[in-house]
Image (cartoon, rainbow, N blue to C red; front, side):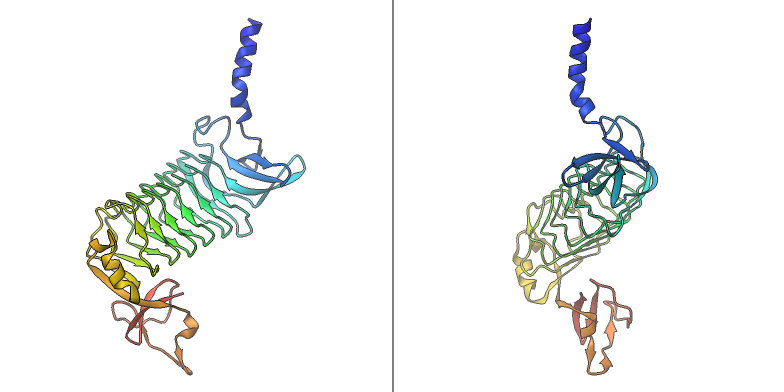
Length: 303
């Protein structure tokens, strides 16, 4: 009997070793480096399915946490940390955070999550990170992020707006698949590739803006499948023909050339403020970063 118990205990060691290291103000963590004093947000227990809905309501992930008298910087949200926490409604991450990564499936199927603030320190978003977050309405990807994982926002059916900041170079396969409420998307000049099925069934898209001078590589004819190919696609004025001829971009029929991005401070002539109109010809005074406006008869983007 003792031999069998010893064998069972030995077999359980890997599972026990994978449990969270400590809890701080209702959030569970693993220590990722004793030397650097860093920690990762994780789930409670031995696996993401050990407990049901261990996180709920609105949660703030602090920049630092304390365990046994030692301060640790929170630098990552681990794989499946908030997986299937269906009562989780909001995540706030402070501006002074040192968070650099959101892991695979970190918020997968958090169906009540409506909002998340992401700090400028973030550099990577893992596969399926927000997959199935059907109540998420808007998100801004900071400039430090260079790639977005496969199916990161798969079936985020309430998502209406996405801001991709400069720095993103690739969008993974199926990243925005099934984001059926997405009405517009702005793609940064840094973007070089878009994965297959990335915008599949984004059936509410009314406009696409792409700042890249060279058309980003589109990896599949399904990338923009079920998207109206007659919607306006705003691209740099000198690149219209290149987009019309580029593989899969050529399926779109309504290209509109826009001037390179300009700063608000440039919209003056001497001491006179230029008259600015929106795309419907209505005069506007309050300009939005990334917005497209008509200035002096030309379409420009505000930096």
